[in-house]
Length: 134
Length: 230
Image (cartoon, rainbow over all chains, first blue to last red; front, top):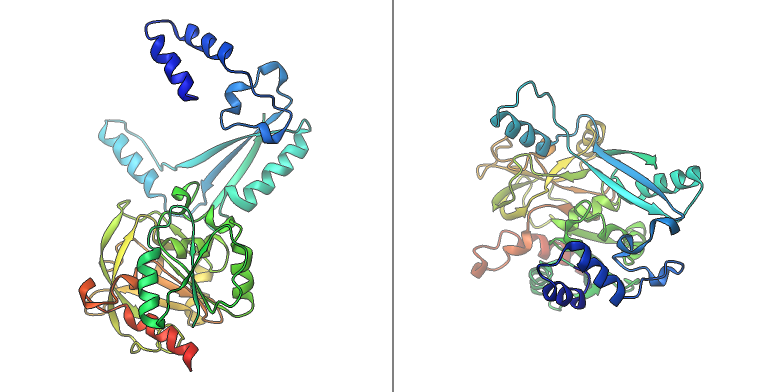
């Protein structure tokens, strides 16, 4: 839920359809402008109308390198076996990080996402990553 | 010795560390918030344990990019002493001040128990008050303490005498049973090449008074303090 105000709205409208609740929220709460970084709220993705999104999305997939023990993957594989799934080989667990970038050039977006991957998103001692632009 | 403890959001062992440092040095350490940018006048920078930034992304990943870090890099680059314990060790590896990384414990469980450590060398500023190969007890409390590095890095650490402590049995045997988190070659702590940056997973600061159940960790704090008094 976005705000105390919205919570109140939800409680007041229990029983109505989800669409009704959303409509009430949008009319009572001004939509954030997205042209200034200072105005970006944590709920930005909920507030950008699709037609205004001049962005690309970078999907960064981070995986442990070959040879690095992945005990979570092992545990998941074991649990799947317990559930009766057979024929499961190695199971590896990774992370998928979706970045919305204010960038229209896919190559520039890729270069930026790769730098982010090297500097923060992956620890290259133990992980590798790949970037996909969508 | 003037010590500082760097405090990040989510760190929770800074007070234990402050007690240990004050016992050894006779004065309270300076507490430095992660948004500060200066460590002027500090001899020993300590990064304590906890869960900085909720362990988001990777343990220590966010802390290693916070505003205080350039000052810690500069302190280490001019030969200053840096001690990282538990999350502090993870932060030092994430920051590139120590090699390798700390992975999820091999058994996946959060470990909260005592362990025993073997002092690999007793001629550093941190270990001069231990005996060579001495075994001492230290509490463990971590979910990601499984030390990992490429085998060439491990060979280099061992070849250059940069392994500080190894997990051992109470009798001093280095074996898989003692190595509860699965660390490569039982490594519990390592030094930088100049032996002044030390990272380790267990908590020597939690055994510095008989009322805590022992004083096994006290020689480490007395040792580093004496190194500056000399």
